[in-house]
Amino acid sequence: DPTKEQWKEILGVCKSKSLLPFIDLAYQGFATGSFDDDSYAVRLFAAEGMQFLVAESFAKNAGLYGERIGAIHVVCQDAATASNVLSNVRKRNRMMFSTPPCHGAHIMSKIFKNPKYMEEWKEEIKKVSGRIQQMRKVLFDELARLKTPGSWEHILSQIGMFSYTGLTQEQCELMIEKHHVYLLKNGRVSMAGINQNLSLIHICRCRRYAVCRSRWSPYH
Image (cartoon, helix red, strand yellow):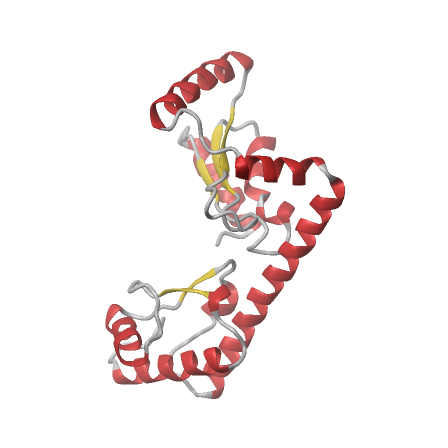
């Protein structure tokens, strides 16, 4: 997860190489709890006059998975370019799905147009993000208490719903097959799916077991 300073460096590279950036804003608000902070890169690139694309989804931050509601934003340098882009986007839209479901769009429209709903949504996002950050801290503390081999600082430094644990495929398979702790075999786990009771203790004990049984320790 790039810092603000790193985003500025990324911007510099994009400018120097005349790149057309495509920013994926998959769950705005879930990373830091702030809509503004999570969209820092978008605002930075726009302020610098860059042409770029942004894919935005409300599947996670509004709980609208079944509706798959989102948007594609294309920031252009002039009206002529914007007109050409709009024409091409409409053609692609027609070829891919023509008329998408509107139920999710109506829900988000009501939220955006009503200041009271908007503030309630922001507060709910802040609570969800805060809980995820809390789970990161508790998970880290429990792994440390169990003296689990390896460095686990990355759990705290990463942000958002997911964590790349650093576990190898062998370790992941061991956790899945022997302990029924399910995660992707690249080590990615959903922090939102962990609770502070038995779930977290079980995960930490299983993770320690998997690491100790393997020759390789995470990020060690």
